[in-house]
Length: 305
View 1 (tube, helix red, strand yellow):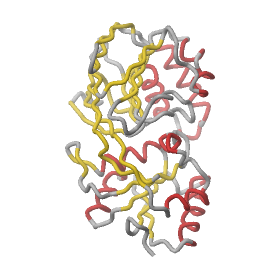
View 2: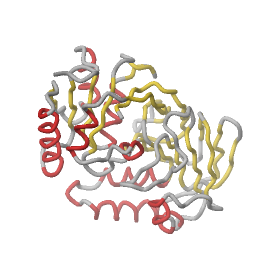
View 3: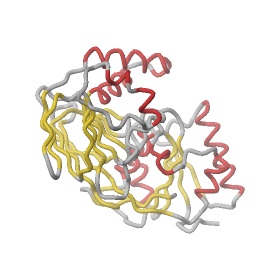
View 4: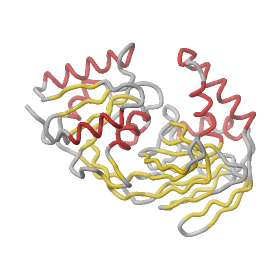
């Protein structure tokens, strides 16, 4: 039996072993018990976006990204071309697996397999915004990338970059080492951040451009972020390097605002070109460097809720 959206394809990245493998096995069993028509693909490294595009080209209209926010990001980028969906009728489901799986939290979809299967078998969806950023890639060439949850420029992006350089088996230790290195290397260049209605010029420790509300394994960084209002929640962190550590507990609770060292805005566009350039991450993936321009693509993605 197919769902309302047709046969379902699960695109699973990093779910071949450990907790991810167990979660995927449990989820597929729960979906099969409901009689749903589905299959699972395990793309090779770097092949998630291509797998999503291949599924759409094959006529499938219901895809489920199984993995981290990086997995969701790769699937979404595979579903778009030149800032437009290759097939507007595609519905995207999300099954979070692994660290850095915060996108689903905004929608209350961070649930165990039994509840997640019931949700995926349902008939509700919503149209959400997608962010687009143009930037300088690691090779120095101009590049563009979509994101669905959150982007950063500065300290947070450098932390993600450093985590990516660590051996995967080091786990939490790698994140602590990366955080220490990012704080030691943090710069606060005087930066003009251009928004739709104003320009804010400050020493910039970190820039958050949020479509969703959560990041970093549960920090509620953007409690006023709405993924379907046509605007980013934009936060400029202007304090000293110790600010990020001192704010940690308040960030988890979403109680860091207001703060004299955080400037908050709502804007459909964000531009910055600091000197020296700052690193950029989207959906917990390091992608390159400023200068960068962020734009909201309004309600262009159908999300299964």
